[in-house]
Length: 409
Ligand code: PLP
Image 1 (cartoon, rainbow, N blue to C red):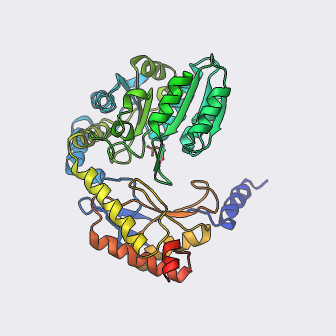
Image 2: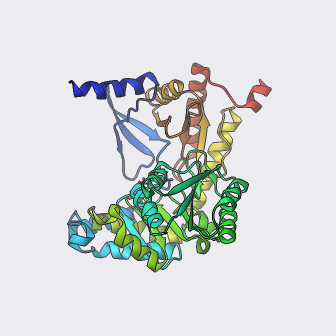
Image 3: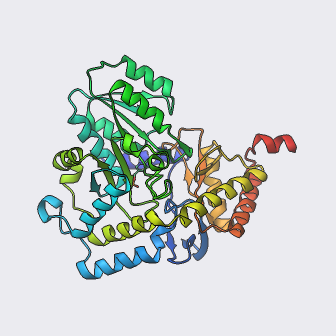
């Protein structure tokens, strides 16, 4: 048997469906965000990145870099093992305190990524609730879906952000049964926001626990960067707030925050916590520096929103199909996997603009798109250059424009 043939045919399937993924070989340039070098087949080229989840450019902030370098020099690189084997490094203890404070919770627990925090946090919590029923928003991230799968308990999916449907499902469930409602505060592919208070009202009414993924909101929303739960004054109503250190905080790692007892129980039972090496001290120190900076500096948040609003306005004005979004995410619908990939290639090769195509399974088939994430450092000149490049690509690929622009033509 030629085992390799199985892999070849799996890859051929992706190529046939036009969703075989190619990653650009990029070298980010500290201090020149969002500029980077692209190691193209023809050599090194200057490009502008328009799709990074380093939303606020904190991965290149001097205080964050300084904290990482200082701690690496003093404490070394690795953590030396799992926390059960090697103990906890002190910068990690400080980081957990910082995170608990950020969300106004008694406790926080760190994982090696946001993905792992959902994948192991959700099933661990659900398994500790006898006969738990999980209620999950239809657009929840894959890490949450995997967490639900591993929980092995009953689950029901409610239509995205549809409170009437959530209530219907809660009402149908046995009132005595423990229930866990899981949702995101900000959905990163469409850029829309969950009605957090309404979800908590239903949770109160039907006696359910709530678990909110704030991965795409921490650092960026709320007066101290505590996310949409903080912005909406709802953090105290949500039982578990989960987040990442890898996006607006510019580092790596994930976490959950909640009551002392819940955090202690997850620490004691979660395989994805117990059996893997802890985050290195230098990464923890860098993340703490980013969180502390964003707790007091409003400049990045204000400028971020200003840039996102400007990108939406300019792209709408030239007739591009900007999907409605009330947040910093600017999705541009293409609706075709092949054209989405071609548009991305043309932007990179002909205009020095990097925007990764978003294809199935990240979004449903037929909803392929470009997902633009303006940062505080994308100035007006870069925005105008983006609009010109997109118009050129739209015309060459004969992609649909928005309805208002079509009516005017
Ligand atoms: N949760 C959501 C909603 C996400 O979109 C992502 C990743 O993009 C994650 C969790 C995983 O976070 P991390 O990148 O820290 O693993």
